[in-house]
Amino acid sequence: MVVDDHPMWRDAVARDLAEAGYDVVATAADGAQALRVAGAARPDVVVLDLQLPDASGVDVTRGLRAACPAARVLVLSASGEQQDVLDAVKAGAVGYLLKSAALPEFLDAVRRTADGDPVFTPGLAALVLGEFRRLASAPAASDGDAPRLTERETEILRMVATGMSYKQIASRLVLSHRTVQNHVQNSLGKLHLHNRVELVRYAIEHGLADASEPGGSQ
Image (cartoon, rainbow, N blue to C red; front, side, top):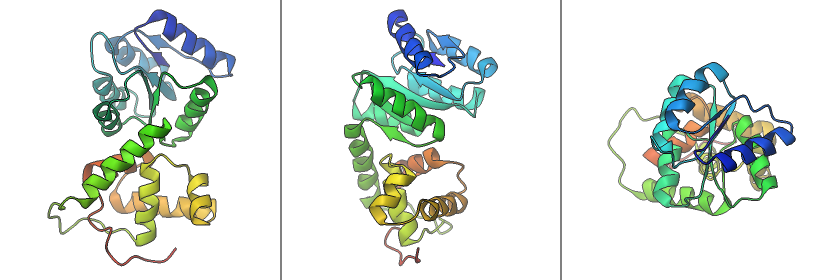
């Protein structure tokens, strides 16, 4: 599903997706239409512009999580402002891509979004990591019941927060894909989260109060 208030851009994105073999189940010109249509169309991926005439794309992202929980949101925006990126991720967007991206990069981002991989325009991934580090270094709120991750889980969570895929993380840490996946699943269970996108939001919103804890092994 493609949501953008500019008809020519919306049609072009839908056409590119269709030519790449994707089934474009719906398009929408504003937030209200997107929320109304999404429930019936049940898209796997929503390519969403951030600047809509009737609502913020951030608010639409939150609404989509309620109207169509299975849909994964990829923001496609002209804005690379830090607050826009962080607000979109906190609202539940899987990824954030600038409209200046080349077509192969966009199609790859859609594919990765469908797989549940957090994906960002390269410079924006560094921005998300920077915010994560800022929060991680801030004094943690007192929470005696906070779940504790191992050192390896914490290390992988940092990488997940940058938008790295399992394959990239496995290569960086010289681990198997399955080992990385197991660590992520363990972290999800400990934190009572459901997917990697929620891990990114957790990293941004809470930091890692337990990052200094002596961790477990692989």
